[in-house]
Image 1 (cartoon, chains in turn green, purple):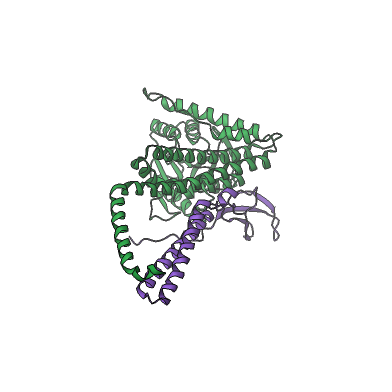
Image 2 (cartoon, one colour):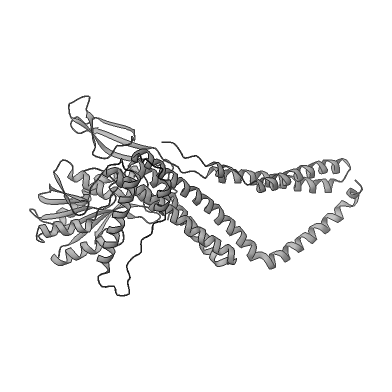
Length: 368
Length: 137
């Protein structure tokens, strides 16, 4: 215990030397330390992404086994499915690209459905659609994980602060999207309506009790009298997970009526900005439809041909709400959307007119 | 529906991290013991310094341990409770029950207990308990 006697002096010298050392270390290695901190943050998110991705795969396989009753283990086929890719058409000469893309998407859809039928032979049409959606959510999670891992490894290999910094900056948004897909997995597996189904839910409520018929592709149309007008209501055929091809459906209905349509009203879920309330309704002009743009193009082409006005009503929600089980706020807003649609009809059309109302979105868990 | 539990690999906290935390914890205990010894030897200033260092190291290691545990517990997919509203359009009876596989909106169910009309699924939704933070701007 002899050192204790002169402890005070030694300690102040140690503290001084340590602070000088820290100063030098931070001067030369400050950026590198900052990078290691960022790498650790990315690493933690990557672990979480890996966990979510593996859970996604597990849920998909379990659901396939439970519903599809396959004779062989579908795991290997699921792993192959999760790696599928789609090459979009060449755009150097953009003329006619929409129909090329449409064809590629049709081929993709058929291929994925055939794969699901092979993996789950005992499933019916509705279950095939739900299983396809489940697998697509798992596929999206696998893709997100792989891209984040790619940039993480690249940043670590090259020790590039800017690669890691960019990754770290967008990571909260990426994680939000991944978590949304993770909750979508269960919704698809159980066949629950999702936030994106706001449009089909409105259409279903309007057409319930009226006879409907199928229109290409994977859509239904019903003729419903509303406020003295004849409304042709279109939605994707439910209750399986399906968005249909509203572009083809609108085109078909307009052609069937030789263009004598007074107005087209589209209802869809729209991405809300931060600060806006979930389930808030807004209306405007234009074709309210997301996706690769093929359906929007077809609708715009048809309405331009016959000079038909187009209106849109959207239900606001964020990306997480759009792919996870439908929130009560969205479900409760349906009556308000119908009121808004009726207002548009009264203001923009005359009695006796024929109008088209399209409920756009994934109709999983919503019948008609 | 149950909440997905973390997998066994995700359940583990890095042994490397635990070793470091344990070493820091042990050193903090040594520092605290030394501070007691220094205090009894009359070295008040030195004892105070060791006490601060000991407590700081102990707080840091406990914080690190809790942080890593929290990170592990975050590794799960939350599946919120989904509810189904069943209604009789004729007599207006409305019941809310937990979602069952096979439910879909506008699915016709068994006959109503009051009248002979069929019950109908009119809504399927999840309730979000936590309120979103409001920014007064």
